[in-house]
Image 1 (tube, rainbow, N blue to C red):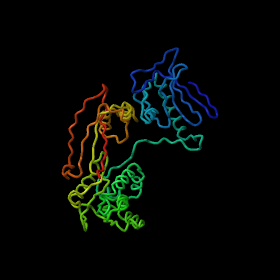
Image 2 (tube, rainbow, N blue to C red):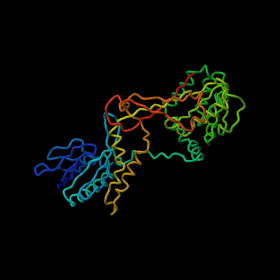
Image 3 (cartoon, rainbow, N blue to C red):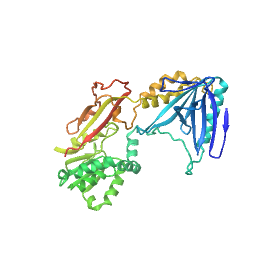
Image 4 (spheres, helix red, strand yellow):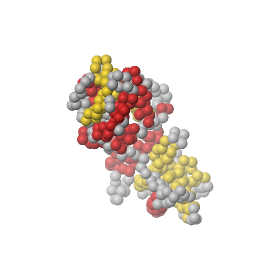
Length: 400
């Protein structure tokens, strides 16, 4: 064991039996001439753990102590899981390093050092004066379990701001309306689930004769205030607080406009309200913005994502968690993590074959067709590789 300290640089070295990366089939073992060393170090406020054999660092086996977790799998084996990054793919992922000890004393020394260095790392001031704090990258989104919770969520300005600041989505709707001005000029428009009223204002900008903004949540009051504050446009907009299934309108609509898309298009059940509004309010051969939704699907291969999800269950591989063996639940935990969808962007190069497409024509589809959607899948792989899952995404079309 070695220990050296300085003003900006300090380190601690411990000898190990062997180390290996979880996703790799090879390991590095100690010998009498070239032992495997774990080196804790702090350079300029950044605490890290690296492994080397002799004087050579082992490529890839470096750990950020700010994000790392250490699990004891047995008397002489532990697992270190941390956040890492792939600069080529511009993404972060979890990685695991398996650590073997020669004896239990060596294991205790390593765990004690890991805990002390991690505590120091989380309280270390960085050169810019900020505090280094480990933050989870996993999302804490809560899906509403009732209509009351659903409407309360969408009735908050914070949520509406998040949607308005999605400039790709907002800009796409603006372009779809303004570039199809001929469809809106002199026409009656119904905005289904109007939210803040932004789409109603776009329709008025495009020359709509009148717009009925239907919103069931408390956001209707904010929409009314926003529209009143834009009187040139607002004089042609009426906000109606209520559900599209229940409200009555004084006239039929030539155009429906809405943002009814949830996760993978169909989540949140807003599409059903969009279709109900079509059946109740739209004149024959009226137009819908959007008019078509497409769900795309293709198998993908992503070893980083697979390891990241698998690592979440490693907590349950501990055999001595305060004297309790957690391993009987490991299999269930593993299956549980892999049964959950991952909502994130992905690199199209991860797809192993061309995608297939399921089309929903909003002008023709029936409400009951959305209650249960069955999509037969058949793919022919373009490359020989391990398939880790099914990638799904959607888009919508505005046919003016």
